[in-house]
Length: 151
Image 1: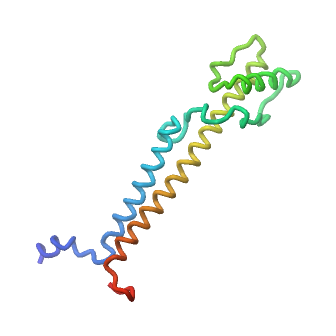
Image 2: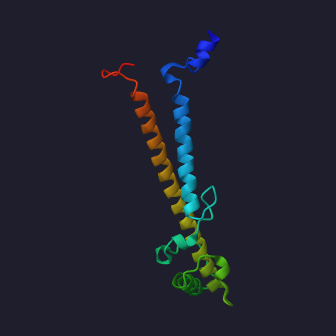
């Protein structure tokens, strides 16, 4: 009897492969997620994406800063960074502290936007891959059914 059950897949019946389908869907989702991260130059958690993937003029100044006297230096630094397509805060250097802070704020905002876009695209790819894996599993499961839906 033991040999017979082993040969037939352990006797799981028609629900025996359900866990395999879920694992396949999860694996497909993670593979799709990591492919997007790799394409965007991000780490495996979606951070550190290539900031140049974000158009400089799509970056908006969130205004999350405190100006020392007035905000002109900060705004000028932000605008300069935008015009010069700055992708990293190390590219910001100035004798004016507020100018440098504005440039750095641009680089940080651009990086955050690149990470956010990479993570959103990765999650969409993961959902799509999981859905496709589920559809394949359903198709595989339905092949053994009779026309009236019985097995």
